[in-house]
Length: 295
Ligand SMILES: Cc1cc2nc3c(=O)[nH]c(=O)nc-3n(C[C@H](O)[C@H](O)[C@H](O)COP(=O)(O)OP(=O)(O)OC[C@H]3O[C@@H](n4cnc5c(N)ncnc54)[C@H](O)[C@@H]3O)c2cc1C
Ligand code: SF4
Image (cartoon, rainbow, N blue to C red; front, top):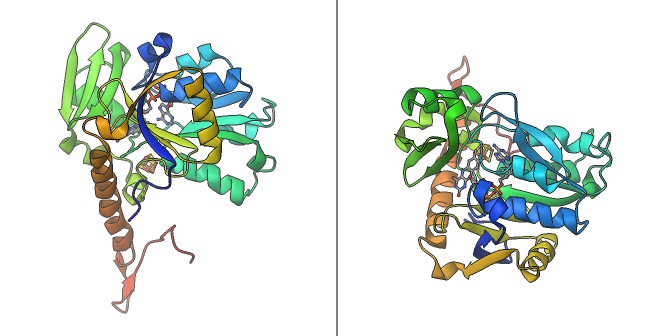
C-alpha cells in the first residue's frame, strides 16, 4: 500500500522568516511558499483559512499580500471550506494564477474540479499551486468548542495556539497556561465524514507539509509534482528554508508511514463495513454508498 503517495523528495524544513515562524503552526512551510509564490508572480492570490467572526472559526479568504497570509497562518482544527472560493477567485477576484491550501480531501476536490469541472468553468487551468497539509481527522466548530471549553477548561478567545501531537490535544493560552486532553477522547468528536478518508499526507498536492516526523518547530515536506518541485527549488535557492535530510531527523519518516498506514487501514475497514451496513426485507445485505466505487 502506497500510503505516502507519489513524491520526488521528502525533507525536514523550517522557514528562515521569523515573522512567519512566530505565527505559523510548524515550520511555516505553507505561508512561506505562498509569500514567495506571490512575490515571484507564480500565483496572484492564495485561498487560505483566514480569521472568522468567532474565535478559532476560520473563514476562507483570498490573500493577495503577505500580511493577509500571516493573518491566516496556523492551524484551526475545524472545517474551513476553502474550496468555496475556488471559482469566485477566478471571477470577482480576477485571479489568473490561483494558490490554494487545504487538507487531503480538499486537494482531492481541487484535482477533481480540474479533471471533471462540473460547474467549474475556467478553474482547471488557473490552479497554479495547491499546497496540502497532513490531516488525521477534523472537527466541527461545536466539537472544537467542547474540547477547548469543557475538556481543557479554557475560553476559546483566550487561546493562542492549539496543537495535536504526542497523544494529546494541547491548548496554549495568551497568558501562558497549557491545558491538554488525551487524544483517546477525541474519537466521538470527529466529523463522521473523516471516517472514510484514505489520505493522510495530502497525496494530490503539489507540495504537502505536516508536523509529524520532524522535531518541534520543523515540518515534514513532500515535494510531489513538477510544479511543486520548481517552486521548492526556487524557494531553496532564495534561502527561504533551513533543511535537514529526512533520514537524519527524529522521529522521521517511519512515524509518518506508521500513522498513515493506521489511518488508511482503519478507514478502509469503515468503507468496507458500509457495504453490508443494513438489511433488506428479504434478509440480504443493503449497503450504504461507497464514493470510491462507481454505482
Ligand atoms: C484539521 C487538521 C488536522 C491536522 N492533522 C495533522 C496531523 O495529524 N499530523 C500532522 O503532521 N499535521 C496535521 N495537520 C497540519 C498541521 O497542523 C499544519 O497545518 C501543517 O504542519 C502546516 O504547518 P505550517 O507551519 O507549514 O503552515 P502555516 O504556515 O502555519 O500555514 C497553515 C496554512 O493552513 C491553513 N489552514 C489552517 N487551518 C485550516 C483548515 N482547517 N483547513 C484548511 N486550511 C487551513 C492556514 O490558512 C494556513 O494558510 C492538521 C491540520 C488540520 C487543519
Ligand atoms: S480526515 Fe480526511 S476527510 Fe477529514 S478533514 Fe482530514 S482530509 Fe478531510
